[in-house]
Length: 393
View 1 (spheres, rainbow, N blue to C red):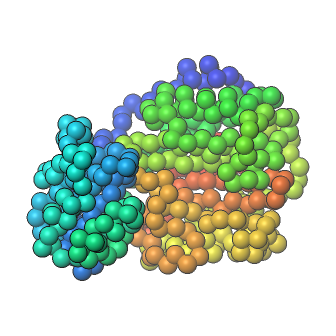
View 2: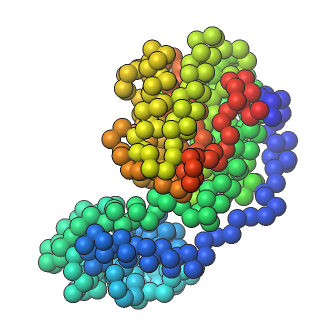
View 3: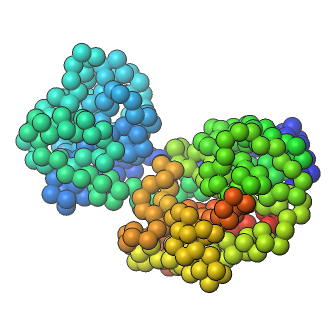
């Protein structure tokens, strides 16, 4: 699709959801996840795993709730039925979303849910606690005499490696966003406001079946030098760099794709930096394979940058952040492509690949696609941007 050759109404009218949609995660897969979590919890020397509301609760139970001040939590014994702690007035909603069999322990507004956890955990031994559990709740649980340990090895040990069903959800979400990105490029014109592009992208994500945008950043010119943009509503000028970063969700699984391209003519320095970024992204991808530590992909990208006189490390002009992050039910999740993360890559792990180059206060280039580790190397979910002038081939 060509940059700046269409309008929002035409592009929205042309969008159609996939003819065949990816199915949701099955009850059988949820049961297998619980079994895997039990094994990892036992291996960590604990008798139960305590999971906080959010992406991890959704992963194990299907309940897609966000965390609030009211405790909703899963206590998963190594042996025995799962226990769900939940406000009593939410019981109907909980049961409508729940995909596993569980013992519901319900609390009224004037009761202490931590006491319910302590009672359910009595006699189970050490409790492996979700690292995202609020500190105050964990401390109150510890005050009951419970011994707490880190639950990340069990939770991340399950969530980092995606099943075929999860990979399919991720692939569909990313294909949707890539099409939306291409259609957004087509509606650009001098003077268009970033907010107008953001509204279009949200509408396009709705039209294509992604439930709207999970997030969207639209940056022009100098604002591209700031990884998460600048405040205010920019307008696109002639011969400016465009950076758009956006994503949606399919059954809770995220896309997160960035394209950086020229609107009109841009200078040779920008083109040279774009080419270095493209090479660094390819180097990080080439480094990915089973058994390779995650930090190796970050190192491979930085070799390209340093060879071009950028950096080193996080110095600018150069790469100010990690090369990539894990992705799944959370848009950012372990493991990370960053120095110090020595997690061995394994088939089914999924990562962003975005070694952004920032030239301070002038411009930045970020190309972001995602890959998953295979038995022999890595595979792209979406093909990288081919050129600065042809962002979609």
